[in-house]
Length: 124
Image 1 (cartoon, rainbow, N blue to C red):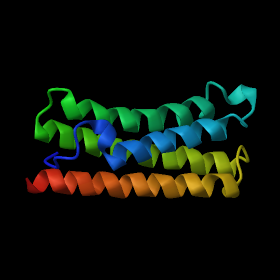
Image 2 (cartoon, one colour):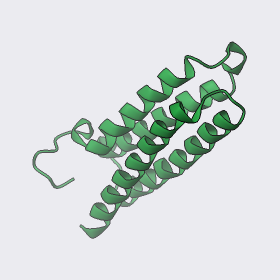
Image 3 (tube, helix red, strand yellow):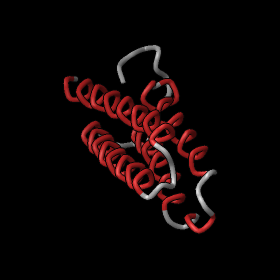
């Protein structure tokens, strides 16, 4: 938060990558069967959006540093939830590993960036 180049949550790479993750998840689910609309499709669309929202909310939301760190930890938990939904989607053949693996890699990147931000906030 102390970097003078960062004026908004939109400047945070972690938020940008979380939005990218939400985008690829939306694109993936367009191939899912219609009967999954209220099942896997909804989950795989909503969770990454919630990750980006948790990153954004704490930035100017009047939260204390401790509350923001807690929100970032919740975002990490949401990433694990998303990974689980993706892996189950692969196992039940809603999507192939060719489609899922890049998204899992994106989840890993967002997770590492979240951890780095948490660490930086805890050090200051």
